[in-house]
Structures are given as C-alpha cells and as structure tokens.
Image 1 (cartoon, protein in one colour):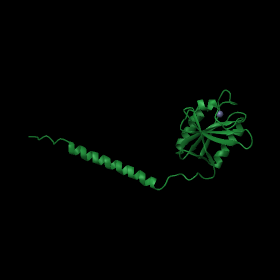
Image 2: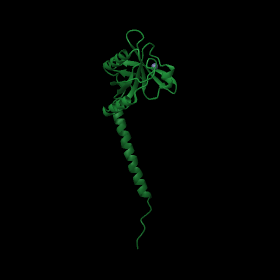
Image 3: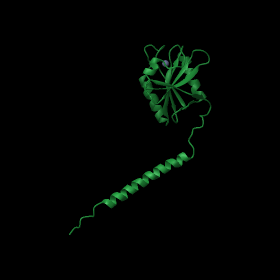
Length: 179
Ligand SMILES: [Zn+2]
C-alpha cells in the first residue's frame, strides 16, 4: 500500500520540522480514507528531552482528534521529525508506536532538502510504506462494480432476513383453539 501526501501536506510537515529544530516536531495527519493525508495538524512536543524524543501534548491531541472527526476525516498517520538523523524509526519510535493502524511519517532534516519517509510499525515489525507526494492522490482501485457489489450484499442481507421471518412464521405452532 502507498501513502499519498498532497504537496501542501508534505511542505507543512517539513516547515514544522524546520521551525522546531533542533527539537523534534510532531503531529497528526488525517485523510478522507486510509493511505492518504489531506490535513496536517501540528501538535506541541512536551517530551522532557525534545531534542531526542517526542511526546504529543495531551490536550492538543484531543482537540486535534475532535477536529479530524468534525471534518469527517480519519486519522491516517502520525509524523515526527529527526533533526539530525535519517527518516528511519528509532528503537524508541518502534517501542512507542501506540497506534498500529496508522502510518508513521518521519521527516529528516539531515541534509537538504528535508526527506520524508513512511513506515508501518506493528508489533515491533517495521515495513517501509512507499510515499507518494503529488497534487492528486494516485488512482484508488475502486472500480464501478464495488458499488453494485455493496448493493448486492445489502439486498441479499435483506432477502436473508425476509426468508428467516417466513421460515420462523411457518414453524410457529398453530394457535391454540379457544373453545
Ligand atoms: Zn523518531
């Protein structure tokens, strides 16, 4: 699976990293569906040692989650910066990946220009996610039949319920005769 970032989102993450350097910057990315970032929300880093770690400020994190919800988006990724390192998850990043269903985006300020990389960190396993930065998301594989497929599932579910009602009615014992 690829992860798509709009050019605005990618430069917003890089700009936040540069602004916070030499501290690590962190924040959330949200999208209309999994695998894409339509919105970047910077979150203050309140780690005791912000040059080497990040810890998102709780209140800002909750506000950001509400904001994402209100916009009808989903949390799709978490980003942070490595002011001096490569965009590769550290041992701490792997240990502290609390959200297994979102992509970890790391922006490195080592060298010019900033480099972004995305990773799945799940159960201590790290897999690179190809990052696509461009004006429009890559064609999502939602062919037309998906819609009719969904309808077919709904209709067959309704039919199944009707059949069950008919069967259970036919299995009812006859009404007792009232003398
Ligand atoms: Zn890190």
